[in-house]
Length: 214
Image 1: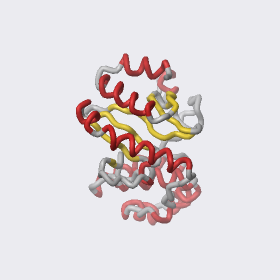
Image 2: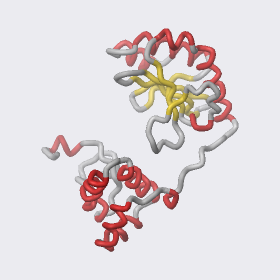
Image 3: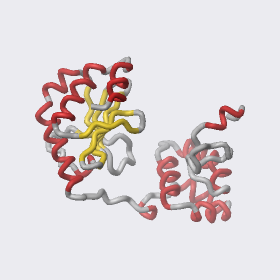
Image 4: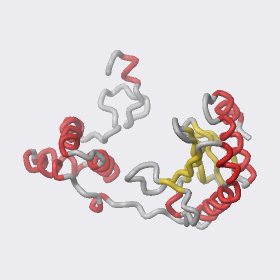
Protein backbone atom coordinates (compact mmCIF):
# COMPACT_ATOMS: atom_id res chain seq x y z
CA UNK A 1 0.00 0.00 0.00
CA UNK A 2 1.24 3.45 -0.92
CA UNK A 3 1.09 6.19 1.72
CA UNK A 4 0.30 8.77 -0.98
CA UNK A 5 -2.90 6.87 -1.75
CA UNK A 6 -3.75 6.96 1.97
CA UNK A 7 -3.41 10.74 1.85
CA UNK A 8 -5.37 10.98 -1.40
CA UNK A 9 -8.33 9.10 0.08
CA UNK A 10 -8.25 10.81 3.48
CA UNK A 11 -8.18 14.24 1.81
CA UNK A 12 -10.95 13.45 -0.66
CA UNK A 13 -14.13 15.44 -0.13
CA UNK A 14 -16.15 12.94 -2.16
CA UNK A 15 -16.10 9.19 -2.90
CA UNK A 16 -14.03 8.16 0.15
CA UNK A 17 -15.99 4.96 0.82
CA UNK A 18 -16.00 4.10 -2.88
CA UNK A 19 -12.23 4.68 -3.15
CA UNK A 20 -11.60 2.44 -0.15
CA UNK A 21 -13.64 -0.42 -1.55
CA UNK A 22 -12.19 -0.15 -5.04
CA UNK A 23 -8.71 -0.02 -3.56
CA UNK A 24 -9.39 -3.25 -1.69
CA UNK A 25 -10.56 -4.90 -4.90
CA UNK A 26 -7.52 -3.74 -6.85
CA UNK A 27 -5.06 -4.95 -4.23
CA UNK A 28 -6.94 -8.22 -3.92
CA UNK A 29 -6.30 -8.75 -7.62
CA UNK A 30 -2.56 -8.65 -6.97
CA UNK A 31 -1.85 -5.24 -8.46
CA UNK A 32 0.94 -3.00 -7.18
CA UNK A 33 -0.23 0.33 -5.80
CA UNK A 34 1.49 3.47 -7.07
CA UNK A 35 0.67 7.17 -7.29
CA UNK A 36 0.95 8.82 -10.71
CA UNK A 37 -0.55 11.96 -12.25
CA UNK A 38 -1.83 12.85 -8.76
CA UNK A 39 -4.05 9.74 -8.80
CA UNK A 40 -3.85 6.21 -7.35
CA UNK A 41 -2.45 4.03 -10.13
CA UNK A 42 -2.22 0.24 -10.17
CA UNK A 43 0.38 -1.72 -12.09
CA UNK A 44 1.41 -5.27 -12.93
CA UNK A 45 4.98 -6.10 -13.87
CA UNK A 46 5.75 -2.40 -13.95
CA UNK A 47 3.02 -1.73 -16.53
CA UNK A 48 0.04 0.57 -15.90
CA UNK A 49 -3.22 -1.37 -15.69
CA UNK A 50 -5.82 0.89 -14.10
CA UNK A 51 -6.08 4.30 -12.45
CA UNK A 52 -8.56 5.44 -9.80
CA UNK A 53 -10.27 8.77 -10.40
CA UNK A 54 -13.16 10.85 -9.12
CA UNK A 55 -15.48 13.24 -10.91
CA UNK A 56 -18.47 15.35 -9.93
CA UNK A 57 -21.12 12.73 -10.70
CA UNK A 58 -19.15 9.49 -10.49
CA UNK A 59 -15.90 7.86 -9.54
CA UNK A 60 -14.18 5.52 -11.96
CA UNK A 61 -11.62 2.87 -12.71
CA UNK A 62 -9.73 3.95 -15.79
CA UNK A 63 -8.34 1.01 -17.78
CA UNK A 64 -5.31 2.11 -19.79
CA UNK A 65 -5.95 -0.47 -22.54
CA UNK A 66 -9.68 -0.78 -21.97
CA UNK A 67 -10.47 -0.91 -25.68
CA UNK A 68 -8.83 -4.36 -25.76
CA UNK A 69 -11.09 -5.72 -23.01
CA UNK A 70 -14.03 -7.75 -24.30
CA UNK A 71 -16.56 -5.83 -22.16
CA UNK A 72 -19.10 -8.66 -22.20
CA UNK A 73 -21.06 -6.95 -19.40
CA UNK A 74 -21.16 -3.59 -21.21
CA UNK A 75 -19.60 -1.82 -18.24
CA UNK A 76 -16.98 0.31 -20.00
CA UNK A 77 -17.33 3.86 -21.31
CA UNK A 78 -15.10 5.92 -23.59
CA UNK A 79 -13.89 8.97 -21.61
CA UNK A 80 -13.98 11.08 -24.75
CA UNK A 81 -15.33 10.84 -28.27
CA UNK A 82 -11.87 10.45 -29.76
CA UNK A 83 -10.33 8.26 -27.05
CA UNK A 84 -8.60 5.32 -28.68
CA UNK A 85 -7.17 3.25 -25.82
CA UNK A 86 -8.60 4.09 -22.41
CA UNK A 87 -11.98 3.07 -21.05
CA UNK A 88 -13.71 3.90 -17.76
CA UNK A 89 -15.84 1.78 -15.47
CA UNK A 90 -18.02 4.32 -13.66
CA UNK A 91 -19.75 4.10 -10.28
CA UNK A 92 -22.23 6.34 -8.50
CA UNK A 93 -22.24 4.72 -5.05
CA UNK A 94 -20.60 1.98 -3.01
CA UNK A 95 -23.59 -0.35 -3.30
CA UNK A 96 -23.08 -0.49 -7.05
CA UNK A 97 -19.42 -1.40 -6.53
CA UNK A 98 -20.30 -4.15 -4.04
CA UNK A 99 -22.88 -5.62 -6.39
CA UNK A 100 -20.44 -5.60 -9.31
CA UNK A 101 -17.37 -6.84 -7.43
CA UNK A 102 -17.10 -10.20 -9.30
CA UNK A 103 -17.40 -8.45 -12.68
CA UNK A 104 -14.92 -5.74 -11.66
CA UNK A 105 -12.35 -8.37 -10.71
CA UNK A 106 -12.94 -10.25 -13.97
CA UNK A 107 -12.25 -7.07 -15.97
CA UNK A 108 -9.12 -6.34 -13.94
CA UNK A 109 -7.78 -9.86 -14.49
CA UNK A 110 -8.50 -9.56 -18.21
CA UNK A 111 -6.66 -6.21 -18.31
CA UNK A 112 -3.67 -7.86 -16.62
CA UNK A 113 -3.66 -10.64 -19.22
CA UNK A 114 -3.88 -8.09 -22.04
CA UNK A 115 -0.71 -6.44 -20.70
CA UNK A 116 1.06 -9.75 -20.13
CA UNK A 117 0.36 -10.72 -23.74
CA UNK A 118 1.93 -7.48 -24.92
CA UNK A 119 -1.19 -6.49 -26.86
CA UNK A 120 -1.22 -2.98 -28.27
CA UNK A 121 -4.10 -0.78 -29.36
CA UNK A 122 -3.92 0.12 -33.06
CA UNK A 123 -3.32 3.87 -33.08
CA UNK A 124 -5.24 5.95 -35.58
CA UNK A 125 -2.88 7.65 -38.02
CA UNK A 126 -3.08 11.30 -39.04
CA UNK A 127 -4.41 10.52 -42.53
CA UNK A 128 -7.32 8.64 -40.94
CA UNK A 129 -8.59 11.77 -39.19
CA UNK A 130 -11.12 13.88 -41.02
CA UNK A 131 -9.90 17.41 -41.72
CA UNK A 132 -12.72 19.90 -40.94
CA UNK A 133 -13.94 21.88 -43.94
CA UNK A 134 -13.20 25.10 -42.08
CA UNK A 135 -9.54 24.10 -41.77
CA UNK A 136 -9.35 23.14 -45.43
CA UNK A 137 -10.74 26.59 -46.25
CA UNK A 138 -8.08 28.26 -44.11
CA UNK A 139 -5.38 26.16 -45.78
CA UNK A 140 -6.59 27.43 -49.17
CA UNK A 141 -6.57 31.02 -47.94
CA UNK A 142 -3.21 30.68 -46.18
CA UNK A 143 -0.80 28.25 -47.86
CA UNK A 144 1.77 29.07 -45.18
CA UNK A 145 -0.67 27.76 -42.55
CA UNK A 146 -0.96 24.44 -44.35
CA UNK A 147 2.82 24.22 -44.67
CA UNK A 148 3.32 24.93 -40.96
CA UNK A 149 0.63 22.43 -39.98
CA UNK A 150 2.17 19.69 -42.11
CA UNK A 151 5.57 20.36 -40.54
CA UNK A 152 4.18 19.47 -37.09
CA UNK A 153 4.72 16.00 -35.66
CA UNK A 154 1.85 13.51 -36.27
CA UNK A 155 0.88 13.68 -32.60
CA UNK A 156 0.55 17.46 -32.68
CA UNK A 157 -1.46 17.32 -35.90
CA UNK A 158 -3.84 14.76 -34.41
CA UNK A 159 -4.33 16.88 -31.27
CA UNK A 160 -5.37 19.86 -33.39
CA UNK A 161 -7.66 17.83 -35.64
CA UNK A 162 -9.41 16.27 -32.65
CA UNK A 163 -9.82 19.62 -30.91
CA UNK A 164 -11.23 21.31 -34.00
CA UNK A 165 -13.53 18.40 -34.92
CA UNK A 166 -15.04 18.10 -31.44
CA UNK A 167 -16.90 21.38 -31.94
CA UNK A 168 -20.40 20.63 -33.22
CA UNK A 169 -21.08 23.97 -34.90
CA UNK A 170 -19.18 25.34 -37.87
CA UNK A 171 -18.75 28.76 -36.23
CA UNK A 172 -17.20 27.18 -33.15
CA UNK A 173 -14.83 25.12 -35.29
CA UNK A 174 -13.81 28.23 -37.19
CA UNK A 175 -13.30 30.19 -33.97
CA UNK A 176 -11.06 27.45 -32.61
CA UNK A 177 -9.01 27.31 -35.79
CA UNK A 178 -8.52 31.08 -35.93
CA UNK A 179 -7.55 31.11 -32.26
CA UNK A 180 -4.74 28.62 -32.91
CA UNK A 181 -3.45 30.03 -36.22
CA UNK A 182 -0.60 32.02 -34.57
CA UNK A 183 0.45 28.93 -32.62
CA UNK A 184 0.43 26.72 -35.73
CA UNK A 185 2.36 29.30 -37.74
CA UNK A 186 4.88 29.25 -34.92
CA UNK A 187 5.05 25.46 -35.39
CA UNK A 188 3.81 24.82 -31.86
CA UNK A 189 1.53 22.02 -30.69
CA UNK A 190 -1.76 22.68 -28.93
CA UNK A 191 -0.16 22.31 -25.46
CA UNK A 192 3.37 23.48 -26.31
CA UNK A 193 4.85 26.41 -24.43
CA UNK A 194 4.83 29.69 -26.32
CA UNK A 195 5.94 31.96 -23.47
CA UNK A 196 9.38 30.45 -22.92
CA UNK A 197 9.04 30.23 -19.12
CA UNK A 198 7.96 26.59 -18.80
CA UNK A 199 10.07 24.30 -16.66
CA UNK A 200 8.76 21.30 -18.58
CA UNK A 201 9.45 22.15 -22.19
CA UNK A 202 8.05 21.72 -24.76
CA UNK A 203 4.82 21.51 -22.74
CA UNK A 204 3.48 24.53 -20.87
CA UNK A 205 3.27 24.01 -17.09
CA UNK A 206 1.81 27.43 -16.29
CA UNK A 207 5.09 28.86 -14.99
CA UNK A 208 4.40 32.05 -16.95
CA UNK A 209 1.65 32.91 -14.48
CA UNK A 210 4.29 33.55 -11.84
CA UNK A 211 5.83 36.16 -14.13
CA UNK A 212 2.67 38.17 -14.53
CA UNK A 213 1.61 36.49 -17.77
CA UNK A 214 -1.80 35.20 -18.76
